[in-house]
Image (cartoon, rainbow, N blue to C red; front, side, top):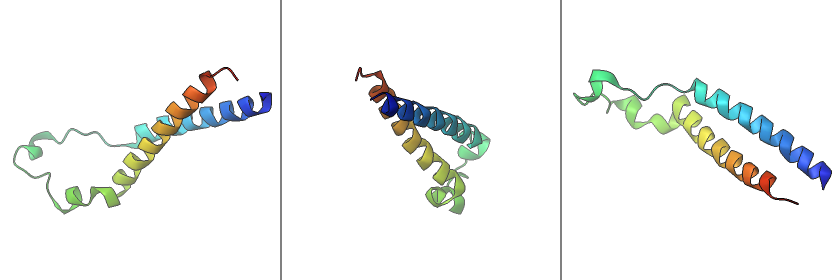
Length: 78
């Protein structure tokens, strides 16, 4: 069981580093004055899920879930 704990700890550290990098790569969510006039609903705003920003958001959610799951597993006394 000691080997499994070491492997999970290494994976946990790698997920943590990747999560920090992904969060820092994302753009800010402040739209400025353009959101007041409705300029945020452009073509790129509607298809944001297919863009690089949408991919970063999706990967961040997946890594955050993996981070929480690994933290809970590593906290168990096995």
